[in-house]
Length: 327
Image (tube, rainbow, N blue to C red; front, side, top):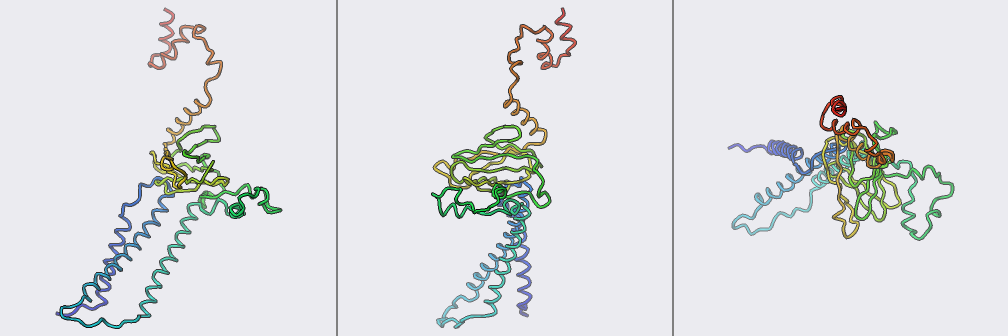
């Protein structure tokens, strides 16, 4: 029987490993559902890493298994193994492959970070956090360099900003998020609404301004693939577009105290109509009916005026109510 050439074996194994790696990389099912525009970017990067990791696993483990079988000690063979000291071409090849992979993943990750808006906030800011950490007892005012631009310092914001195509444009909705032991407090500055859950409309550009009251927390929504630290004395922000209505957990991803595990809430993504309804309801709670309406005495109403709200609720024509009240 004619022996199959080694290059043909290598080509066949390479094709099989590639096909298996591609299938595993794009069908692993390890991540939760995607619920934001940013999640797709992160998942694409994760899928590429899964393809590479699967290929490396198959090659390395396959080589080990092959060597265990092919070079096992034969029965009656008590001789020593070959005195192999090194193989320079193989070592150079084995070093170059991981180097190319690491450099490629590094460039790709920077591109993803930029597309998500990671370079937008704080890209022109002087950092003073290190100086503050080195001198915790020093008054804050003494740490600001002489001649520093106050306006620039006031813009010291870190996190994820707008993507390149929306850079410089205001968000559709802005929410202030305060992390404290052991809760998240959400404030809508345009309406004054304060809530323990984050409500946002679907497909809207949302910007959240994150701060911490006591210790470091971390705002994490796994389905959005977004996580941003909340640091006392340091403003951070996160900008995202939710793409699927539903409720998703918000988890504190930084050990912040004894009840850290209980610091959970949820982000509720509404359709545009549902969000407007929720907004109107909360505005009505924040701004209750006027004192004149509260002081309204039913005894001062006519029968038609008194029955009108009940008629509307029951679907009865207003003229019929007026007619009956006249009887």
